[in-house]
Length: 284
Ligand SMILES: N[C@@H](CCC(=O)N[C@@H](CS)C(=O)NCC(=O)O)C(=O)O
Image (cartoon, rainbow, N blue to C red; front, top):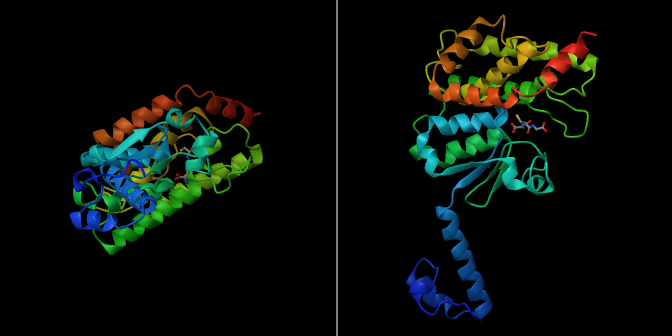
């Protein structure tokens, strides 16, 4: 078989013992062994690639990376254009839901769902994180999990990918939604923020107390994007009437990593014509 290494120096195998043992194998098996070892060593040096658009669900990963500068050497961010464009067949091979974000991990895993991806990075890179976003107490970690769940299930996520199904947050930008559904989702969105208000730490400054958690990383991008969209349409200020959320948001927004994400998302949604069109149609 051509292309087989003729010495240990040329081999991808990790030790001389392994290399010498491989010489006793048939060529095809040796070739496969060398190929696996080459792939492993390439993956060991490769970065994770997270595919994003500048909106709130991918925003939690962008924010986590911004808060943990050492991740710059470990994670690259790419956009839809690098994978065949929005909802392309190529992208759907990575994320069958056709939604953003997704992650091509350096170890070969392919992931989607923003919370799964952020937890993967949190777990994989524990040793180099300066802001691990993990609560210090059982209570903080558990309330953080609850807020993330409320956020992902009842505010930002759509749990059916067939046409005509929507998340609560999309009342601001999906014109196809019926008026009845939009009114119900508007009430529910307010209710969910009210529920989160009840679980927010009384004195903060972060969602669950004195340390950043995934609750902050998940909630901030959503409140920020809805603060940009809401006043243009039927929502208004998404957290009006929630004083703890208002105080928490101001605390986050004063931090450059948070504010710069908010600015990126605001610039992305600024040209959208949908919010005003929805408002006009809703009042008819
Ligand atoms: N539960 C998913 C939600 C993903 C999601 O809805 N992403 C939005 C961006 S914020 C999206 O891809 N929207 C594109 C579309 O609706 O066509 C997650 O957390 O990753």
